[in-house]
Amino acid sequence: MPTFELSSVSPAEVAADLLILPVFQDRAPGPGVAEVQQRLGADLVATLAEHRVTGKLGDVIVMPTLGRLKSKNIMVVGLGPKAGADAGAVRRAAMKAGRAATKFASVATTLAQVGSDAEESAHALAEGLTLGAYRFDRYKERPIDEGSKDKSRLKRVLVLASGPGLKSSLRRGQVYADAGNWARDLVNTPALDAPPSFLAGEAEKMAQANGLRCKIWTKAELKRGGFGGILGVGSGSANDPRLIELSYSADGSGQPIAITGKGVTFDSGGLSLKDATQMEWMKADMGGAAATIAAMRAIAQLKPKVNVIAAIPSSENMPGGAAIRPGDVLRHRGGKTSEVLNTDAEGRLILADALAYLSEKKPRVIIDSATLTGAAMVALGTDVYAIIGSDQSLVDDLLEAGRAEGEPGWQLPLWTDYRRNIESTVADVKNTGGRWGGAINAGLFLKEFVGDTPWAHLDVAGTAFQETPTDVWPKGATGSPARTLIRYVETQAARGRGKGRNRS
Ligand code: BES
Ligand code: ZN
Ligand code: MN
Image (cartoon, rainbow, N blue to C red; front, side, top):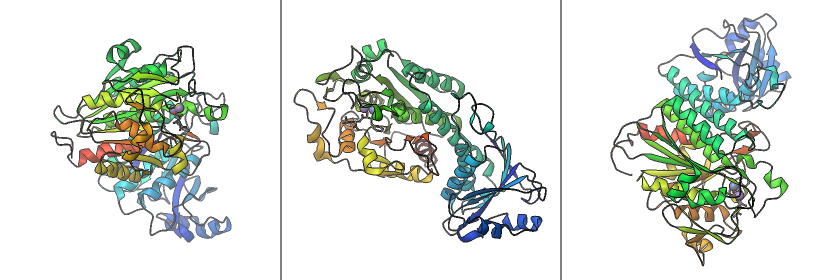
């Protein structure tokens, strides 16, 4: 992970392995370009034209300075149209630049000078570069990019900008990105090495290092506590399930924000077995859990003035001899029962227990994140996650947090008439609702377990993992929606929502 430092040195004078300079659409020069052109005695913009770099968002070109500048190389990154270039553009450009910058140890950039909100831009710069430089090469003998193993070589970033608050903005951006990258590591780790006990162990170590309270529920404790969903889903696996409980306390009195996430460490489908292709990425079925645990880490480091609790269920969904069968009925925490018609609709079964447990704590709101349905992915693709909730202002706040972090979501309706789809003849509810509106049916199932607590559900099946990399996502785990959760919590704290018992 690179470290960030502010500097007021001119880009023409700064000595770095790589100097990153922004240009806007139609080759309009960004901050620092004029000084550097003058020092080089060369027309940088004309050179871009020769290379057909127009300044489109995400355009990147690297060129050596051949001794004509103190910095050894220049990277020009496109920011898109000058008028719309805000912190969001800075983040995207920084991600793209970060990915290409890992060959260089020291980097300097004027990128944080773009945009109308200097603090947001600094945050986005640190976040984007750190996320962009992410590599997962722990399992490779020879690391990617000839960097030291498991790390890119990008070590030091000089941020050429000045202003009050920028130092803490850089730090916040880095904390957000470190959390996102840690979630990526957890998700990318193969299921062979990452059963529920591993996830619990990582959470426990993190809690210890960051001053969070942590309790890991073992299988025996889950039995005594009546967590039939977590146990049922885990019963076909040789790896026992866990419930991971974390709490951050800002002050004793305020009602906490409660978060949870689906932690299915591998989803084979169980006896309702998936086919081979559908199983390829199912180590990522704990993406919601990873993002939630990582968000707790960032919260512990940023110390917002609002209490936050998390209870993350983790099971491995396998078709072993003790596996649950279609037709089985499970009794969840709190007493409600569900009829399991498809063992591949397992996420909602483990979340039901966690939601019921969290609602006992009388939180202000409950937010769950889950790689829950292929239907959400069919509806919204791989860039945008689905949000469904029982409280419109909570949904709006999450949509806003996601937008601010470059992790966009889109709302689907909690269409209560579809409750008929999950009506069971033998239990309180059944775990599948037919082919149509699958993401909504899943949401309606979850809602059964939150009582009257305001609740929202993020279905990140499409965004948690990418088969094809994009400008903003690497191939593999993305860490989505960790940054959304962190931003939501920080915003609530800033609005003074941490105190008292008022839910609205
Ligand atoms: N983990 C899957 C959902 C999923 C699918 C995530 C593709 C990421 C990519 C989930 O457990 C599942 O299998 N859902 C089923 C539910 C159905 C059986 C009601 C689905 O979406 O097909
Ligand atoms: Zn699943
Ligand atoms: Mn499944």
